[in-house]
Structure formats: structure tokens, C-alpha cells
Image (cartoon, rainbow over all chains, first blue to last red; front, top):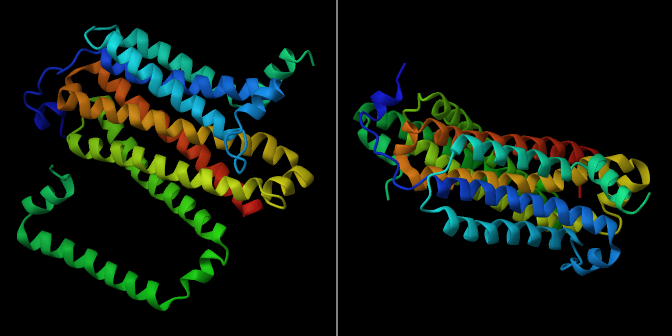
Amino acid sequence: MNTVSEAYPEPPALKFPTGEAMAALLAAAIGLLSLGLANIYSAIDTGFRAAITLNSGIGPYSGKEVFLFAGWFGSWVVLHFALRRREVNVKKWFGVFMGLMFVATLLVWPPVFAVIADAFMGG
Amino acid sequence: MEIPIINRIRRMEPSLATLLILTVGAIAVIGLVAAITAPVTDLVGDTQWHYVSAFHGLGATVFLLGSTIAVYLAWRLYTGQLTAFRDLKWLTAFSAFMSAVTIAFGNWIYIAYRAAGGPRSYFLGTLPEIHEIFFEFKEFIALFTLPMMLAATFLLWRYGPGIVKHKELRAAASLSVLLGWVYMILAYVLGAAITKLRGV
């Protein structure tokens, strides 16, 4: 069986600090959390729901996508410049990333977000 | 810019390269003849939405194929046994691109899904759980594929082969590919099942 050492006898050291990698991952999770939160808030507030209906064809889904991309790319820029020269604890921050992804996934699972929305509406 | 598959063909023995090119060429010719002579449009349907739907489904299938190979290579990266780093780089980038294409066509076809008399009103009238749980989840979870695949692409292209020596970073890159693939499978299976119940 081939191994890494056979394929890359001397792989070069990392070209950039690990902060850049974590910025990319955490930004993705922040964007998806923004999507989940926008989705829940649109279920709670009809005014917000109407405001994020940027396209009548796909309804409020259009605004929720804007929240995703704005949260994702906005936080990526900020985190990239904040972390680009730092060596971070990859294991710890990847664990944080996985935790955020777990929460983001739950926030878009209808039985969960419906309960959260109902709780906020006092239902 | 080096494209792995072309480089590999160039490095092959001439007889092997010829055999491969002849085989691919023969399949392409047969496919072209079949596509020209068969009533392919009957398979697609006869409204503008059928074409959009077909491209959405085809995009998702190509994404499925590319990302499935990528996830296998990502496993090899995770275990430290990857020999085809460039293949993984390209396949992950390709998966991110196909994710974007599929999402774009998904947005377009969503107009037909929500239109009066479309699948959404049918499901809400007959099987509300299909829309309220499965479709709602599918429309969001499909979006999760793009950030995962693009973040993994960034890691692999930015850090290059050096990442294979960094145990935690290579785990982060490979698990992101895996996560993107899991989200893609969820969206793909739900999309196929919902389309089977009621297409646009």
C-alpha cells in the first residue's frame, strides 16, 4: 500500500499559519448559523418575513440566502484578517466548528425550528 | 495550470493511452449517435420547467459522482495514505463548483415548486409533512454543501501538499469534504423522493 511518505518524500512545511484555515471553516459555520437564525426569525415575525422576500418567485428563501452569504463571506473577511498570522489550536477550534455545524443543522430541521419559533411566539 | 488527468495520460505507456482514448472515444461516438437519433426531449418533458428540473437533477448527479470520489480521496488523506493529492484538490474544487451550479438551478426550479398549482400546494393539500418537514429541510440542507466544499477547497489549495504532514489540518480538510458529502446525500435523496411523489 502506498503511503504519504512514498507519494511526498519531503512534503513542504505549511505555507501559511493555521489561523487562515480556521477562519475559512468558522466563517462557513457562521454563515450557516445566520441562515438558521434568519429562518427562525422569519417564522416568528411576519414583517421580517415580508422584508426578506427579495424575489416573489422563491419568497423569503431569497432573503435567507442573502443572510447565509453575507454572514459567510462577511465573517470570512473579518476572521481571515484577524487570524491570518496566528497559529491556532486546530483540534480545539475544529471541535468548535463541528459544534457550530451541529447547531446550524438543528436550526434548519423543521421539528426543531418550529418548536423554537413557537416558544418565542408564546405558543 | 496542470490538469491531473491529462498529465497522467501523457505519462502512460503509448499502448495504454491509445486504448483509453479509443475506449472513451468509442463511448462518446455511440453516446452522440444515440443522443441525436433518440427522442431525448420526450424524456425531459415539454415545458420550460422540465429543462430547468433536468439540469438541476443532472447537476446534482454530477456533484454526487465527483464528491463521492472526493470523499474517498479525503478518507485517504485523513488516514495519511493519500497518493493523489492533486486529484483531491481538483475534485473538491469541482464539487464546490457543482454545488453552486446545482443550488442555482435549485433556486430556479423552486419558483415552479412554489407556483400556484405546483408541488407545494399539492403537498400542503394532501401530504403536508412532505413539504413542512422533508422539503423545508432539503431546501436548507442543500445550501450547506457549498460552504463545506468551498472551505475544504480553500484549505487544500491554500496549504498545498504540505497539509498531508499536518495531522489535524488534514483531518479538518478531509472531514469538511465528508460533511459536505453527507449534506449532499441528504439533499439528493430527499430531492429524488419528493420529485417521485410530485414533479414540476
